[in-house]
Length: 26
Image 1 (cartoon, one colour):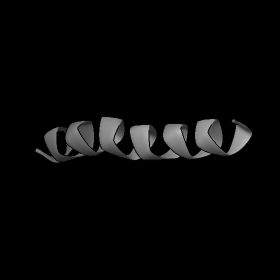
Image 2: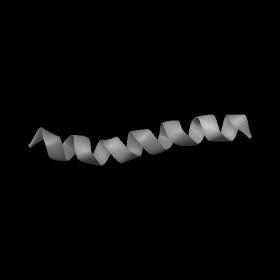
Image 3: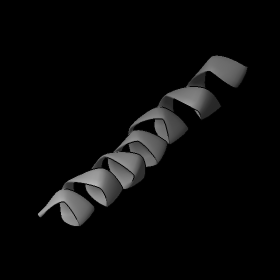
Image 4: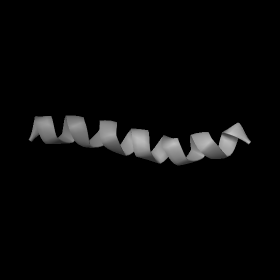
């Protein structure tokens, strides 16, 4: 049951951290 909750947070957390470094590098 906890797997489903983590699955939804995985892309959300990753997308936020992925945009931070890309925006700062530009």
